[in-house]
Every structure is written in C-alpha cells, then in structure tokens.
Image 1: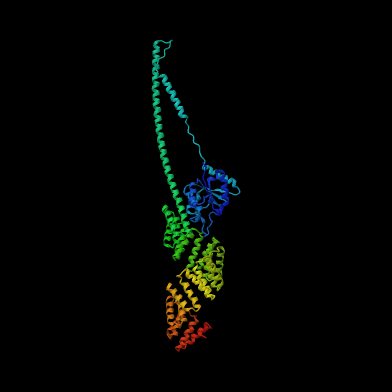
Image 2: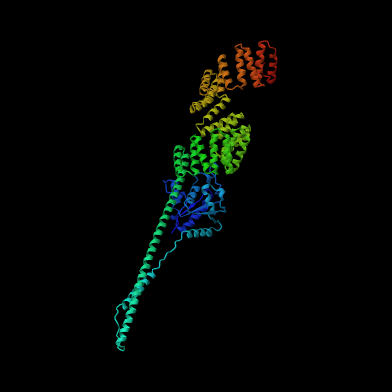
Length: 639
C-alpha cells in the first residue's frame, strides 16, 4: 500500500528544507501521493475546504518544525500559531483530531515544542516522537524517515493451508473401501482344511467383519459429529467476527463523523475570520454561530464571534462570548485580551486592565496585551505606566508601529514633545501609511508652534485618509494660527461636509469668520454649534465675544452666563461678563464678577485692572491697589 503523505510547514521558517524533503519523499512514494501547500491547490477551489479534505485523506502527516516555528508573528505582532486563521495550526489540529500518524520533523537545529508553549488544540503534538533532519546528514536522515513511513504502511501476506482437508478425504475413501472389502461376508474355502474348520474360519471372519463394520460406522458417526461441531463452532466464530466487524465499522463511522465535524468546525471558523477581514460581520456571526452549534465546548468560535460583535460595536454581546470562551478554557490568553479591549471600548478601563493582566500572566509574550494595557493606563492618565507597557510591547516586537505611535502620544501627554515626535517618526518609517501617526505628529508640531510642519503632516494624513474629519478640522486651526482664514474656512467646510453634526468644526469656522470681521456669519456658526451640542460652553463664550463686538451687551451677558453655568471655573468668562455689566452701569455686579475671576486666577492682571477701574468709578480708593497689582502682574496692562 502506498501512503498518502501531507507535508505541513511554515514558509517563513523552513521553506527550503521542506521543499528538499518533498523531492526526496517523491522518489520513494511518488509525487501524486504527496500534498505540500498552495502550489498543489487547483485554481478556483475553496482554500479552507481543500486543505481540510487533503488532511482527511492523508495517512501520514509530517509537521516540519524549524527554529522559528513557535515565534513567527503576524503584522499585528500576535504569534501566528495562536491566530484562529493560521492554517499551519488548523492543519495540524485536524490531523491530530483524526488520529492520523503525525511525525514532527525537526530541521535546522530546532527543538521539540513543550506542551506549555502550544495552543490547546496542538498540545497532543508534544507527545509525538520526532525525527531530526540535519542539513549535514540530510540523505541519511531523510532515508531514516522514509523507512519509518514504509514501516507504518507495509502490507503483510496471509496464507491459508488446505492439505488437511484433502488428506481427510483420502483417508475416508480408503476406510470406506476397506470396510466394503470385508462387508461381503463370503467365507473362503481352502482345499487343505476340513469342512468344520472352514465353517469356523468363516464364522470368525464374519464376526471380525461385523466388528470392523460397526467400528467403521461408529467412526463415521463420530467424524460427522465432529464435523458438525466444527461447522457450528466456525459459524459461531464467523458470527462473532461479523459482530466485531460491525462494531469496528460503527466505531470508525463515529470517528469519521467526529473528524468531519471537527474539520467542518475548523473550516467555519476560518470562513468567519475571512468574513471579519472583509468587514462582513453579520455573515461572520452567522457562520461562527453554526460552528458553535457543531461544537459548543470549543472556545475558539466563541472568541472569534466576539471579535465580530466588537467590530459591529455590540460590546455587551462580545463580552458575553468572551466570557463563555474563558469559562470553557480559563487559560485562553487571547479571549482575556479581547475582553479587555471590549471593556476599554465601554470606558471601563479598570476591568480592561484586569483582563490584560490575566492575558499577560497566561502569555508573557503577548504583544497585544501589553500594547492595549498601555492604552488603558493612558486613558486613566497614568502615562508612566502606559510608557512602560509600550516599551515592553516594542521590546517584544521592535517593528510594532502602533505601539510606537501610542508611546509617542503618552510622551506628548507628559509634555515631552521631542520624544513624542521621535516615536511618531519611527512609527511612520515602519508604516508609511499610518495616518494616525501623521495626525498626532502634526498635533505635537502645533504645540511647539511649528504650524508649517503641522500643516504638512495633516495634509499627509488627509492624503492617506480623505475622510479624516479631524485632520481637516485641525489643519483649519493651523491655517487660522497663520491668519490664513480663507484656507481655514475651506478646511472647516470639508470637515462639516464629511460630518454635518460636528459642532467643533462649525464653531471653529465661526472663529475664522469672526477673525475676518464677518460677525453675522460667526454668530450663525456659533448658534449652529450650540444647537448640535447644547453643552458646548466655548461656543457660548465665543458667541458672547461676537455679540460684544456688535455692542449687544444683553446678549453677551446672557451667553457668558450660560458659559459659566456649563463651566464655572473659566476666569475669563467672569471677567468679560463683568465688563458688560460695567458698560451697562451695573458696577456692583461687575465687581462681583471680577472678584470671582481673581479667585479663580489670582494672576489675572486684566481682572485686577477692571476691578480697580470699577471701584474708582464708585469712589472706592482700594481701586488704586488693584490697578497697581495689575501693573505688577503685567506692565502692559492698565496704562
């Protein structure tokens, strides 16, 4: 019998050696009896189904393990072996599940993985006896592997003896002939004996013949009884064997059904991942729900369906699926990490951090868990811990652009703008299409007052993502700082076109119109921003400023009052409302507002100056002290 052999390997790890091994085995078993990888897949067929069918059809499964087999990572920094769509892991798991002979082949000095290093579905691999395939002894080692495969599939001849039956027939025929010879009962007459002697002799012969006939009949009866017993025993044995064969067949059917169910399960999970990558989340959920129906005790489909729900924004269902995955497999690090992401999306950073801690405990090399825990610490304002986690993620994967970008954001939050820019620049070098890194670097350049570089980075972010609303808004701000209000308004227009409910962009456009002296358009934009966001304190403040420019003290006071209600700690809102009370002749209320402005900001020179003038207006000499204090704080004030 010629074996069907499946060669499993990882291209990033052992392509050359796997190809060389394929050619050597083809010499012994023929190429048509080998399956290696996608080069053998016919065009247009379902990739996942074809691989599962090939695994199901093989008799020997060779897992080629190179020195980097365990640690090869995907573009997200996650170990490929742990990814639910990793076909190397899917193929090995399918072979192990079907009880196919799996032979690990260690190449280029690789070691056999430990049970603790393998995902749950691959842990039985650690118990398979491995064979070394050394470069220096390739021919000898490959020959040893070929012999092992040949031993597994060698046929044994079966012979059945028939001579006993033939001998029995001959003996029976001879016996019957002998009995017939003596059964005639005819006496023999001899010339030299007397008549009496002849009769006696005949009688003896007759008696002897009778005895021999009886003996022959008894022997024949015994032979028939023995033959009947043997036939009955044979029938019983055959019936027992048929029953055993039926049981074996039933067991084989059960195993085959289970193997097919496992293969179907793996195919459905793979399809679900493909649907997620194609953003077809509803289809992914339907496919993964079918996988769960097939095997409700496997954590993989629950975790993957949780990812689909999370992409749809349904965090509660995502968390429910992650909970079930963790219940089924408490050591499933990825499920804990993903649940942490879902909690973070709900704003529950403490639970998120707890889940990331557990994921890191289970898998100390989980780049994703370190990076996401860093984000959670950053949201809690703990930038030092955030930076420490990003450092570890970068140590584990130096090319993890997102971790560099997030560390840059943490440095920027600490006011370390140069370090932030360095991290953003490195992230952009690794991933030139990283729009968020350009956006954040632009923010940092803006903080440093470098509006030209900020505009250049916002422009690149917009090129990479033409629907980037905040990039248009912020570039408008940068143009505004350069007094290029027309370009600023053009950017705000585009931001509003992309997101008509963006109150920030509408309010910023109002500022640009105000700077151009178009107060009516400015007021219209502030009013629209307030309609979109009735709690937008700055929009009330800026509309008040614009009413002030138009000399409308009552409307200005009303807007400052609303701004103060929404945000009671803004000193300038009290100061400005005081000015309008003063202009209306309500000096006492003006002084009360200046008092509050000074309480909130004891170094507000303008508030001291305004209070001093108000006091002098009502003949309070302490106003001179306020004016002196204002000049002390800022020599340019109160001249």
